[in-house]
Image (cartoon, rainbow, N blue to C red; front, top):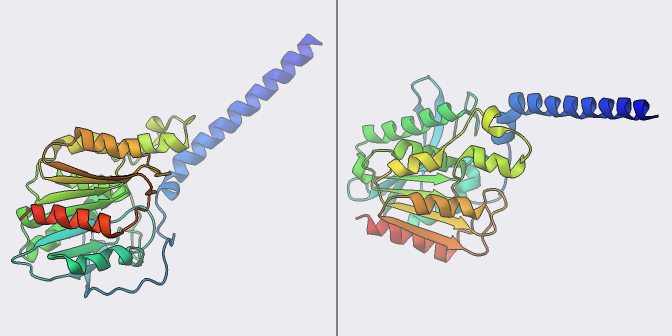
Length: 272
């Protein structure tokens, strides 16, 4: 009786271990499909009211990115380059971009490789190259570091913090930033060794320490994707001058209401 029980228990353990290993293998090879969601559509029906020029930006590895460029006064106003998150298209950010028409600012938003019809597949290093290429494109139009603001949204904060290290940018805006992709993944997969499996780590907590530009961190306390504690941690370890816009009721997709827009506007005005 005991031998039969032990045999059944051993078989059960072997099944559980096999299933666990299968999950690990699946997550390792499928992880980028879980991280990047170019076909997700969070918003619909938004009409763009700010004047934009549709541009194409070529990366050093020969991928052509689509972008929207708004030039109000490139000589007298700062220029903001917008790095969007891990889901959706440029159209999904229209409700945000429309607010920039009321600010004294130029802006460029790019779609990552693999997003909005662009060729290529998104990876951490690929996104860094995309972001760098957008900055180089603006530099050719006469925008230098001291007049450039990097805006990172969610996953885009990983690109913004990476590119802002040891640079002299006018300012950095981080919307719902995470400490690292490893930390963020652990909130969803607590029993998975993500630190061993994860390919794209986006270690913001290390890189933000190397940023000396003024920084604005925005986060909502009820964020169900990136815990608020991560945004607060990024703010705490950031160098001065630093500013925060924390709210009690915003989820991961922050409400672009009058208060948030005024926080961005005030931050940009403080850079002049």
